[in-house]
Length: 318
Image (cartoon, rainbow, N blue to C red; front, top):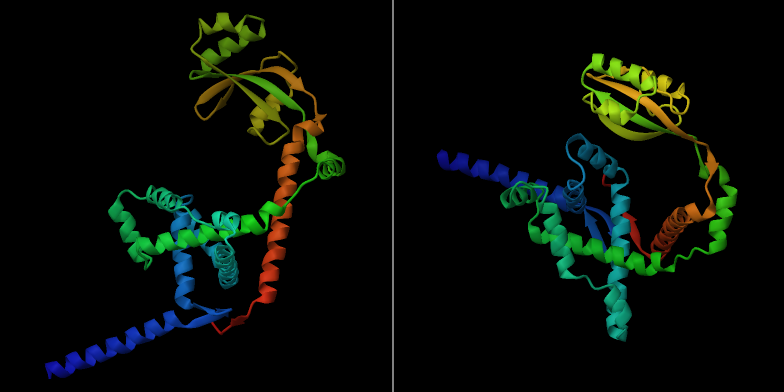
Protein backbone atom coordinates (compact mmCIF):
# COMPACT_ATOMS: atom_id res chain seq x y z
CA UNK A 1 0.00 0.00 0.00
CA UNK A 2 2.83 2.39 0.94
CA UNK A 3 4.58 1.67 -2.39
CA UNK A 4 1.36 2.54 -4.28
CA UNK A 5 1.02 5.83 -2.40
CA UNK A 6 4.65 6.75 -3.09
CA UNK A 7 4.28 5.80 -6.75
CA UNK A 8 1.08 7.85 -7.06
CA UNK A 9 2.75 10.87 -5.34
CA UNK A 10 5.77 10.62 -7.63
CA UNK A 11 3.47 10.45 -10.66
CA UNK A 12 1.63 13.60 -9.57
CA UNK A 13 4.99 15.39 -9.06
CA UNK A 14 6.16 14.34 -12.53
CA UNK A 15 2.98 15.66 -14.12
CA UNK A 16 3.30 18.94 -12.17
CA UNK A 17 7.00 19.38 -12.96
CA UNK A 18 6.43 18.54 -16.63
CA UNK A 19 3.60 21.10 -16.79
CA UNK A 20 5.78 23.72 -15.12
CA UNK A 21 8.64 23.08 -17.53
CA UNK A 22 6.22 23.17 -20.46
CA UNK A 23 4.88 26.56 -19.30
CA UNK A 24 8.43 27.89 -18.92
CA UNK A 25 9.53 26.51 -22.30
CA UNK A 26 6.43 27.74 -24.14
CA UNK A 27 7.50 29.63 -27.27
CA UNK A 28 6.10 33.17 -27.28
CA UNK A 29 7.94 34.54 -30.33
CA UNK A 30 10.37 33.66 -33.10
CA UNK A 31 12.94 36.27 -34.21
CA UNK A 32 14.74 35.17 -37.37
CA UNK A 33 16.18 31.78 -36.34
CA UNK A 34 15.92 32.36 -32.58
CA UNK A 35 13.00 31.58 -30.30
CA UNK A 36 11.86 33.52 -27.24
CA UNK A 37 10.28 31.40 -24.50
CA UNK A 38 8.27 32.27 -21.44
CA UNK A 39 11.42 31.53 -19.44
CA UNK A 40 13.32 34.13 -21.48
CA UNK A 41 10.72 36.70 -20.46
CA UNK A 42 11.01 35.67 -16.81
CA UNK A 43 14.81 35.76 -16.95
CA UNK A 44 14.69 39.21 -18.53
CA UNK A 45 12.49 40.53 -15.70
CA UNK A 46 14.70 38.94 -13.03
CA UNK A 47 17.86 40.34 -14.57
CA UNK A 48 16.36 43.83 -14.83
CA UNK A 49 15.25 43.62 -11.20
CA UNK A 50 18.82 42.94 -10.08
CA UNK A 51 20.13 45.73 -12.33
CA UNK A 52 17.59 48.27 -11.06
CA UNK A 53 18.23 47.27 -7.44
CA UNK A 54 21.46 49.32 -7.71
CA UNK A 55 19.38 52.51 -8.00
CA UNK A 56 16.00 51.74 -6.41
CA UNK A 57 14.63 49.79 -3.48
CA UNK A 58 11.30 48.97 -1.86
CA UNK A 59 8.29 50.63 -3.46
CA UNK A 60 10.35 52.53 -6.01
CA UNK A 61 11.84 49.29 -7.34
CA UNK A 62 8.42 47.65 -7.61
CA UNK A 63 7.04 50.70 -9.42
CA UNK A 64 9.89 50.53 -11.95
CA UNK A 65 9.31 46.81 -12.41
CA UNK A 66 5.59 47.35 -13.06
CA UNK A 67 6.46 49.93 -15.70
CA UNK A 68 8.88 47.43 -17.25
CA UNK A 69 6.10 44.89 -17.76
CA UNK A 70 4.47 47.17 -20.34
CA UNK A 71 5.69 46.14 -23.79
CA UNK A 72 8.04 43.54 -22.29
CA UNK A 73 7.94 41.12 -25.23
CA UNK A 74 8.39 43.91 -27.76
CA UNK A 75 11.44 45.16 -25.84
CA UNK A 76 12.89 41.65 -25.76
CA UNK A 77 12.33 41.27 -29.51
CA UNK A 78 14.14 44.56 -30.13
CA UNK A 79 17.02 43.39 -27.94
CA UNK A 80 17.28 40.15 -29.93
CA UNK A 81 17.33 42.06 -33.22
CA UNK A 82 20.07 44.40 -31.97
CA UNK A 83 22.10 41.52 -30.54
CA UNK A 84 21.77 39.48 -33.73
CA UNK A 85 22.95 42.46 -35.79
CA UNK A 86 25.92 42.97 -33.47
CA UNK A 87 26.96 39.33 -33.75
CA UNK A 88 26.49 39.40 -37.54
CA UNK A 89 28.76 42.44 -37.85
CA UNK A 90 31.27 40.87 -35.45
CA UNK A 91 31.49 37.79 -37.64
CA UNK A 92 31.76 39.74 -40.90
CA UNK A 93 34.39 42.09 -39.45
CA UNK A 94 36.49 39.13 -38.30
CA UNK A 95 36.29 37.53 -41.75
CA UNK A 96 37.19 40.77 -43.53
CA UNK A 97 39.87 41.58 -40.95
CA UNK A 98 38.11 44.88 -40.29
CA UNK A 99 40.10 45.61 -37.12
CA UNK A 100 38.26 48.86 -36.32
CA UNK A 101 34.83 47.16 -36.17
CA UNK A 102 36.28 44.17 -34.33
CA UNK A 103 37.74 46.53 -31.73
CA UNK A 104 34.50 48.51 -31.37
CA UNK A 105 32.46 45.36 -30.82
CA UNK A 106 34.88 43.60 -28.47
CA UNK A 107 33.77 43.51 -24.83
CA UNK A 108 36.45 43.90 -22.16
CA UNK A 109 35.94 41.19 -19.53
CA UNK A 110 37.15 43.63 -16.86
CA UNK A 111 34.14 45.84 -17.57
CA UNK A 112 31.82 42.89 -16.99
CA UNK A 113 33.53 42.08 -13.68
CA UNK A 114 33.31 45.75 -12.66
CA UNK A 115 29.56 45.79 -13.36
CA UNK A 116 29.03 42.64 -11.30
CA UNK A 117 31.08 44.13 -8.46
CA UNK A 118 28.93 47.26 -8.62
CA UNK A 119 25.74 45.17 -8.35
CA UNK A 120 27.17 43.20 -5.42
CA UNK A 121 27.63 46.43 -3.45
CA UNK A 122 23.86 46.51 -2.98
CA UNK A 123 24.07 43.34 -0.89
CA UNK A 124 25.34 42.94 2.67
CA UNK A 125 27.43 39.89 1.77
CA UNK A 126 28.49 37.55 -1.04
CA UNK A 127 26.08 34.92 0.31
CA UNK A 128 23.16 37.35 0.15
CA UNK A 129 24.03 38.14 -3.47
CA UNK A 130 24.25 34.46 -4.44
CA UNK A 131 20.99 33.70 -2.63
CA UNK A 132 19.20 36.46 -4.52
CA UNK A 133 20.61 35.13 -7.79
CA UNK A 134 19.27 31.69 -6.91
CA UNK A 135 15.83 33.13 -6.13
CA UNK A 136 15.81 34.68 -9.60
CA UNK A 137 16.72 31.30 -11.12
CA UNK A 138 20.22 32.44 -12.09
CA UNK A 139 23.86 31.85 -11.25
CA UNK A 140 26.61 34.45 -11.57
CA UNK A 141 27.64 33.14 -14.99
CA UNK A 142 24.09 33.86 -16.25
CA UNK A 143 24.32 37.42 -15.01
CA UNK A 144 27.74 37.92 -16.59
CA UNK A 145 26.41 36.60 -19.93
CA UNK A 146 23.47 39.04 -19.76
CA UNK A 147 25.76 41.95 -18.95
CA UNK A 148 28.03 41.02 -21.87
CA UNK A 149 25.02 41.02 -24.19
CA UNK A 150 23.95 44.43 -22.86
CA UNK A 151 27.40 45.87 -23.52
CA UNK A 152 27.51 44.40 -27.01
CA UNK A 153 24.11 45.92 -27.80
CA UNK A 154 25.30 49.28 -26.48
CA UNK A 155 28.43 49.10 -28.65
CA UNK A 156 26.56 48.32 -31.86
CA UNK A 157 24.15 51.20 -31.18
CA UNK A 158 27.16 53.45 -30.65
CA UNK A 159 28.65 52.29 -33.94
CA UNK A 160 25.48 52.37 -36.05
CA UNK A 161 23.56 55.28 -34.54
CA UNK A 162 25.29 57.49 -32.01
CA UNK A 163 28.54 57.90 -33.95
CA UNK A 164 26.59 59.13 -36.98
CA UNK A 165 24.76 61.95 -35.18
CA UNK A 166 26.04 65.42 -36.07
CA UNK A 167 24.84 68.76 -34.72
CA UNK A 168 25.78 71.81 -36.80
CA UNK A 169 26.36 75.23 -35.15
CA UNK A 170 23.51 76.76 -37.18
CA UNK A 171 21.10 74.17 -35.72
CA UNK A 172 22.02 75.30 -32.22
CA UNK A 173 21.58 78.96 -33.15
CA UNK A 174 18.22 78.34 -34.83
CA UNK A 175 16.91 76.42 -31.82
CA UNK A 176 18.04 79.22 -29.51
CA UNK A 177 16.25 81.86 -31.60
CA UNK A 178 13.04 79.83 -31.92
CA UNK A 179 12.87 78.98 -28.21
CA UNK A 180 14.16 82.26 -26.78
CA UNK A 181 11.56 82.31 -24.00
CA UNK A 182 12.91 79.02 -22.66
CA UNK A 183 16.21 80.72 -21.90
CA UNK A 184 14.91 83.61 -19.78
CA UNK A 185 16.12 83.50 -16.19
CA UNK A 186 13.50 84.66 -13.67
CA UNK A 187 14.11 87.35 -11.08
CA UNK A 188 16.22 86.07 -8.18
CA UNK A 189 16.41 87.25 -4.58
CA UNK A 190 19.63 86.74 -2.65
CA UNK A 191 18.90 86.24 1.03
CA UNK A 192 20.86 86.09 4.24
CA UNK A 193 19.28 83.52 6.57
CA UNK A 194 20.01 83.74 10.29
CA UNK A 195 18.82 80.79 12.39
CA UNK A 196 18.19 80.63 16.16
CA UNK A 197 17.29 77.88 18.58
CA UNK A 198 15.63 80.41 20.92
CA UNK A 199 12.73 82.57 19.69
CA UNK A 200 13.24 85.27 22.35
CA UNK A 201 16.88 85.72 21.34
CA UNK A 202 15.79 85.94 17.70
CA UNK A 203 13.39 88.74 18.59
CA UNK A 204 16.13 90.76 20.32
CA UNK A 205 18.53 90.12 17.45
CA UNK A 206 15.98 91.21 14.81
CA UNK A 207 15.27 94.46 16.66
CA UNK A 208 18.99 95.30 16.84
CA UNK A 209 19.69 94.23 13.26
CA UNK A 210 16.76 96.26 11.96
CA UNK A 211 18.16 99.32 13.76
CA UNK A 212 21.41 99.01 11.81
CA UNK A 213 23.80 97.13 14.10
CA UNK A 214 26.42 95.05 12.25
CA UNK A 215 26.00 91.29 11.96
CA UNK A 216 29.57 90.66 13.14
CA UNK A 217 28.89 92.59 16.36
CA UNK A 218 25.58 90.83 16.94
CA UNK A 219 27.12 87.41 16.28
CA UNK A 220 29.42 87.99 19.25
CA UNK A 221 26.37 88.39 21.51
CA UNK A 222 23.86 85.93 20.04
CA UNK A 223 24.19 82.16 19.36
CA UNK A 224 23.24 81.96 15.69
CA UNK A 225 24.11 80.41 12.34
CA UNK A 226 24.20 82.31 9.05
CA UNK A 227 23.61 80.95 5.55
CA UNK A 228 22.98 82.45 2.11
CA UNK A 229 20.29 81.31 -0.30
CA UNK A 230 18.73 82.32 -3.61
CA UNK A 231 15.01 82.27 -4.35
CA UNK A 232 13.43 82.65 -7.78
CA UNK A 233 9.67 82.76 -8.24
CA UNK A 234 6.87 81.68 -5.95
CA UNK A 235 6.39 78.26 -4.43
CA UNK A 236 9.99 77.60 -3.43
CA UNK A 237 9.49 78.51 0.25
CA UNK A 238 6.79 77.92 2.85
CA UNK A 239 4.01 80.46 2.37
CA UNK A 240 4.65 82.40 5.62
CA UNK A 241 8.34 82.76 4.81
CA UNK A 242 7.67 83.57 1.15
CA UNK A 243 5.17 86.31 2.07
CA UNK A 244 7.68 87.89 4.45
CA UNK A 245 10.63 87.65 2.07
CA UNK A 246 8.83 89.05 -0.98
CA UNK A 247 7.91 92.20 0.98
CA UNK A 248 11.51 93.02 1.87
CA UNK A 249 13.45 95.78 0.17
CA UNK A 250 17.21 95.49 -0.31
CA UNK A 251 18.99 95.37 3.10
CA UNK A 252 15.68 95.19 4.97
CA UNK A 253 15.43 92.65 7.81
CA UNK A 254 12.36 90.53 8.50
CA UNK A 255 10.70 89.88 11.83
CA UNK A 256 11.47 86.45 13.35
CA UNK A 257 9.58 83.49 11.84
CA UNK A 258 9.33 80.16 13.64
CA UNK A 259 9.45 76.96 11.54
CA UNK A 260 9.69 73.40 12.89
CA UNK A 261 11.29 74.26 16.20
CA UNK A 262 13.70 76.90 14.87
CA UNK A 263 13.35 80.65 14.41
CA UNK A 264 14.68 82.51 11.37
CA UNK A 265 15.44 86.10 10.48
CA UNK A 266 15.91 87.05 6.82
CA UNK A 267 17.75 89.95 5.20
CA UNK A 268 17.36 90.71 1.51
CA UNK A 269 20.87 91.26 0.14
CA UNK A 270 20.11 91.78 -3.54
CA UNK A 271 17.53 91.44 -6.31
CA UNK A 272 18.80 90.09 -9.62
CA UNK A 273 16.48 91.13 -12.43
CA UNK A 274 15.08 88.63 -14.92
CA UNK A 275 17.25 88.39 -18.00
CA UNK A 276 17.69 86.59 -21.30
CA UNK A 277 20.59 84.14 -21.27
CA UNK A 278 23.16 84.64 -24.02
CA UNK A 279 23.67 81.92 -26.61
CA UNK A 280 27.18 81.32 -25.25
CA UNK A 281 25.67 80.40 -21.86
CA UNK A 282 23.27 77.77 -23.17
CA UNK A 283 24.78 76.46 -26.39
CA UNK A 284 26.23 73.35 -24.71
CA UNK A 285 22.87 72.54 -23.16
CA UNK A 286 21.12 73.02 -26.51
CA UNK A 287 23.73 70.89 -28.28
CA UNK A 288 23.22 68.04 -25.80
CA UNK A 289 19.44 68.24 -26.16
CA UNK A 290 19.55 68.20 -29.97
CA UNK A 291 22.13 65.41 -29.96
CA UNK A 292 20.02 63.19 -27.71
CA UNK A 293 16.89 63.96 -29.74
CA UNK A 294 18.59 63.03 -33.03
CA UNK A 295 20.12 59.96 -31.42
CA UNK A 296 16.71 58.69 -30.25
CA UNK A 297 15.18 59.38 -33.66
CA UNK A 298 18.07 57.56 -35.33
CA UNK A 299 17.71 54.59 -32.96
CA UNK A 300 13.99 54.26 -33.69
CA UNK A 301 14.67 54.41 -37.44
CA UNK A 302 17.52 51.87 -37.24
CA UNK A 303 15.47 49.38 -35.21
CA UNK A 304 12.59 49.81 -37.68
CA UNK A 305 15.00 48.86 -40.47
CA UNK A 306 16.10 45.77 -38.55
CA UNK A 307 12.45 44.81 -38.08
CA UNK A 308 11.71 45.26 -41.79
CA UNK A 309 14.48 42.82 -42.74
CA UNK A 310 13.68 40.33 -39.98
CA UNK A 311 11.32 37.37 -39.69
CA UNK A 312 9.22 37.92 -36.55
CA UNK A 313 6.36 35.66 -35.50
CA UNK A 314 4.36 36.06 -32.29
CA UNK A 315 2.49 33.19 -30.66
CA UNK A 316 -0.33 33.37 -28.16
CA UNK A 317 1.45 34.14 -24.89
CA UNK A 318 -1.34 35.87 -23.04
